[in-house]
Length: 115
Figure 1 (cartoon, rainbow, N blue to C red):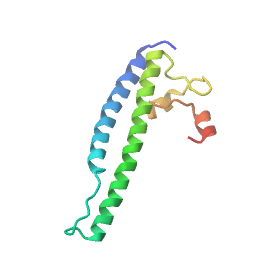
Figure 2: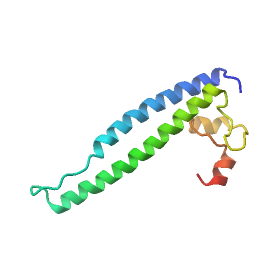
Figure 3: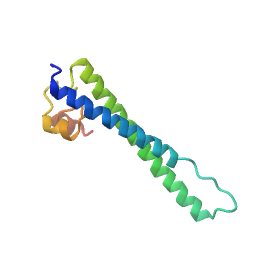
């Protein structure tokens, strides 16, 4: 696939998304620090802190997954395969890439795989 202006714009958007995701991961890492149980902290406060930590860890894992997808999309741009479904090879509709620029799948393959 040729790397014309649409790919330059996609690369710019993906680079911004990469930067934003890295910032959000740093924030999530701070929130995911383990709570410390000591005598000055009540049991319910500790349980609440632990639950918040688990939510932050889950968010961090999701962000890391998104970061991997963004970086894979940047590699597809570099390889000249951006915009083609990695499953079937068909063209991914521009509207889908506009909404989810890191998407490696066309709508049909995404629905079929349940990912």
